[in-house]
Image 1 (cartoon, rainbow, N blue to C red):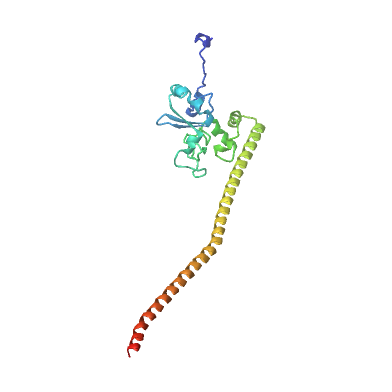
Image 2 (tube, rainbow, N blue to C red):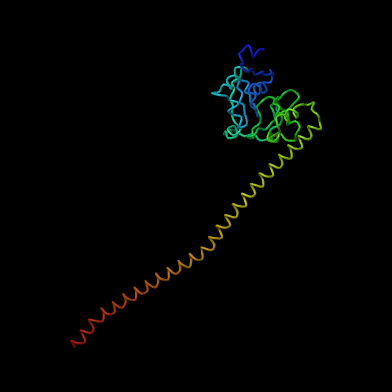
Length: 252
C-alpha cells in the first residue's frame, strides 16, 4: 500500500536499537558490517566493512552513508577492513588490560574495541562481539569463517547448545589452522633467507682464495719488475764509474 502510494519507491525498514553501534550497523543494510566503533562525545561512528562491501555501504555518491547519518543522528565514517588495518595507530594487544567497562573484543588490526560493554557482559552490543563470549579468545579474527547467520546464533544466549558447539568447534579449528599456516609460511620464508645467506657465505669462501692467489701473483710480478729495475740501475752505474779509470790508465 505504502509503496504504491509512493509510486513504486523502495522502502527500507530499519529496526530501532538503543545500542548505537547496532543501530548504525542496521541502518547500512543490506551491506554487511564487521565492526562499529562509536565515539559518544563526538557522536561519530566508524564503520568497518569487508572490502567487497565498501561501495555498497557508501552508496552512489555517498548516499547510503548520508541516509544512515540522518536516520541515526550520528556522523558515519565508513572504511574497508584493509584501510582500517593499515592505519597507523597505537596497538593494544589482547591480554594487556583487564576488564575496565570497555568491550574486550580485539579487532582485526589488534586494537581493542572502544565501545562500552553492555550490562552483565564484557562485550558491547555488536553481534560479532557478543559471539566472542562462546570462545576462549577475544580476537574477532576467530569469526572470519563464520557466516552472519551463525554469528547471530552465537550471540543469542538462548540458542541451541548443540548448534552453538558445532559452530564454535569449526571456527576454533579454522582459526588454529590459519595460525599454523601463517607460522609455516613464516618458517618457510626464514628457511629461504637462511639458505640464501649460507649460499652467499659459501660463494664468498670460494672466491676468497682465488682473490688471494691473484693478489699474490700480482705482488710477485711487481717485486720481480722492481728487482729488474734495480739491477739495470746498478749495471748502468758501474759502467759509468769504470770509464774514467780506463782513460787514466791509457794516459799513464
